[in-house]
Every structure is written in structure tokens, then in C-alpha cells.
Image 1 (spheres, rainbow over the protein chains, first blue to last red):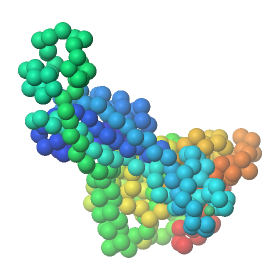
Image 2 (image 1 turned 60 degrees about the vertical axis):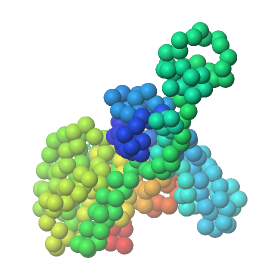
Image 3 (image 1 turned 180 degrees about the horizontal axis):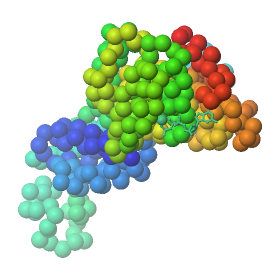
Length: 113
Length: 239
Ligand SMILES: Nc1nc2c(ncn2[C@@H]2O[C@H](COP(=O)(O)OP(=O)(O)OP(=O)(O)O)[C@@H](O)[C@H]2O)c(=O)[nH]1
Ligand SMILES: [Mg+2]
Ligand SMILES: [Zn+2]
Ligand SMILES: [Zn+2]
């Protein structure tokens, strides 16, 4: 559900970064801990892009994995969602460093306009 | 005009396909990449930080309560507001003032947010609810989120603590199915413990699932109906 409102924000940011010109592509980074479903995000994009400067644009989604820093042994590690134990020392879960992002990384705009 | 082949319209070439001039057909025009790096939640984050500043200024400690629909958020708050002085609540639902009406019966202030179609509270809605809150004399504010184990997880409201409720009737593996909301929990409350025997609740299995998905969280077991475990909940609130 809330993918629609989040995609609205991403599209607004893309359109304003393009400064009045067309947007050819959006690169969006989505972490599995962001709480959004990638398919729903794509669906929202298809529904919202028509009529904006990003109509017909490509949506590139970069998916990340949860990453942690272990305060006990200092390890930096990645885990699947739902089990966050440090693989080096067995500590039950470190400081979250990545995997919760939902951001517009960049856009592509035509070069010859 | 297309720089590679010189045709006037890149989408309407006057020549046959299959020709060879160094690019594919329906060719995209040359593009350049602009860095943006902006979170979809940036505005929410800004408003949440504003709320947090407001809470600090008023001396309020704020708790965001999250769970699936019907896990017992309102029932717990009805009792908590009766037992804990200087507390108020903001409650979110898609429709109806029912929960705020129930909570006001405790004598405390309760402000309803009806979100319409929105499946979570966001910092902006909370900011507007705060306009209606008489904060003097308060030191605790509970925000009962919309019953939903998915979407509310993404939205910081400016709270100090996140409390996730899991009732014994909804299945021991709920945390494994909805891990994101549990990861950010400061406290997980296992609710409706009076029903545990009736539904064959597997306590060890549930606690293991919570520990696995909510490694930072403290866990307390309560029944808002019998009052079991509520002293520990009140002590946690005061801590
Ligand atoms: N037996 C028992 N029933 C409970 C307990 N807490 C809540 N209930 C019942 O569970 C049902 C749902 O409780 P609510 O407090 O309305 O749940 P909620 O989480 O606020 O629900 P939403 O706001 O709709 O998401 C009601 O019928 C309550 O009476 C409890 O500790 N024991
Ligand atoms: Mg309720
Ligand atoms: Zn939603
Ligand atoms: Zn470690």
C-alpha cells in the first residue's frame, strides 16, 4: 500500500532533479529491511509515471542485503533478513549499517538536449 | 536529431531496419547520469525529527505501539492510562473514532487520527495531532499505530521507544514472517497471555522467534485482561 506514496516521493525527486526535462531512467536502491516490496514499487511506478516527465522511463532497482557491525568482535557482516547473528562470534545482532535504505541514487537524462 | 545516424527522429527512421550504423534500433538517445541520493523517507524523517524536538521541549517520553490488527493495543492502553499518571494517547485507525472513545473513558486525553486509506501513521499526521494535545502536565505519550505489521515499520514518528505487540493467538512464527517490524523493536510485548493455554501457545518457540528477529528488544509477557505482567510493563515505561 504505502509503496504508492513512497514512489510518489521518488518520482517527484527524479522529476525535479531533471529540472524540467525528461527522465530516461531512475536508479533506486532498496534494502530488504526498508519494509517495501520491490514488485509493489514497480507496480506503483507503472501507475504513477504516465503524465510525468518520467513517463516511459526505465526503473532500475538495486537490492541490498542487511549489513551489520558487530560491537563485540568488530566484524562487518551481511545476513539474510530475520537472522542477524554475527558469524564470527555468535553475538545476537550488531549495529545495523545497511539494508534499510529506500533511496533514489541517480537518474539518467538525455545528453543532447 | 540522432547523433549516430543523423536521422531526424530517433523513433521514426526513414531507412530499413537491419542496417548497420553502430546502434540498436528503437535506440535510446545518449544519456547522462545525474546523482541524486535522496531517501524516499526524507520528508518523513525531517518531520519526525521536528516531532522529537517538540517532545523533548515538552518533557514527553513517547512510545510507538505497533502490531497486527487486534493484538490488544487499545485494551492495553485503556488499562495503562488508568494506572499510569500523566499519560495521553494518540491513536491511528483507517476509520472511526472508536479507539479514542474507548481510551478517553480512562479519563486521559486521547486523540484519534483517521488515516482514510493509509495503512500506517506518518510523522506529518502525528504533527497535526499534536496541535490538539494539551501537553502541560504530561510526561508520557503513547502512539497507537494503525494495526499492520508491515508499513508502520518504515515511518519514524519521532518516538523514543518502539513497542511491538504479539498476541498469543496469532501464531508463534509471526516474527519470522514479518521480521522488519521486529528488528526495530525496543520492547516486544507478548499479549493476551490469559489465552495461552486455550490456544496451545508454544511459548519457547515464540520467544525464540522474537529473540532471533528482535535481537535488541526486551521481552515481556502480559495480559491486559487479568493484569498479569503489567507491573513489569509499567516499570519498563518508567525506566
Ligand atoms: N482474553 C484477552 N483478550 C484481549 C486481551 N487484550 C485484548 N483482548 C481482546 O482482543 C480484541 C482486540 O483488542 P484491541 O485492544 O481492540 O486490539 P487493537 O490492537 O487495538 O486492534 P486495532 O486497533 O483494530 O488494530 C478485543 O476483543 C479485546 O477484548 C487480553 O489480554 N486478553
Ligand atoms: Mg486499537
Ligand atoms: Zn502500506
Ligand atoms: Zn561478532
